[in-house]
Image (cartoon, rainbow, N blue to C red):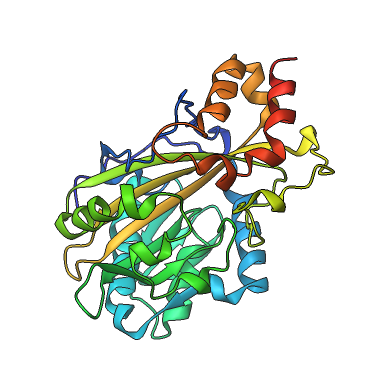
Length: 316
């Protein structure tokens, strides 16, 4: 899995969220992977406690945010055991501490204990993971028919534009079917990459979009598929407009061979982009959604709804 570097003096309460946004003039649909290490599969910052409260609220409202097919139980247990017995206490010793006397991992921030062994109820296992780190975990195994990988378990509190239950059991190509040009541009390379991925190899990618509200869990329709979905009467509140970025980190488990996509969500107010001097870069990137190898992305990302309003603000 790789060497875990401990953050021995880490002060989560005074650590600001990372700034991961980057804007390109032309949008090209690619995997966009860059090498990283196992140290980046979980991120902590000063939003930790408020995010844990929000995640619990989401799970209570939408129990289907956590699920596991019977075939994926060993994969879930392997990920849980790695996080609880190795990763969290080693990487974040100021937040998590092993307690041999109680055979548990103590969350020092929440003053709660997690069992070292996965619970017998897999839903409890998923819930424990979901309420102790601010990552969503999408867990894939080879499809039962041997054709590609499919989503067989997940902790998915922050979906964008769908109910996670609609993705359960789907192959990569099926889950990405609504994405413009995916089948033509990415399907083959994605399937091959997932098939070749070995434990110890960790990669990451970043995506971005504009959100017209601050909701972390966006289950409603979030994309446009035709021009007649666009309303010219749509009001955009610039005080509640955000750049929504996902940091997606992919790695493989050594025992079950599960492919784990760890997703950390960042929200940045649109005013921040202007304040840090990236206004014109973002304007070019908004126009760039309609260029490149997947022109349909401009509509898919809802640019006809918010694009002109956001660009006018950034250039004001």
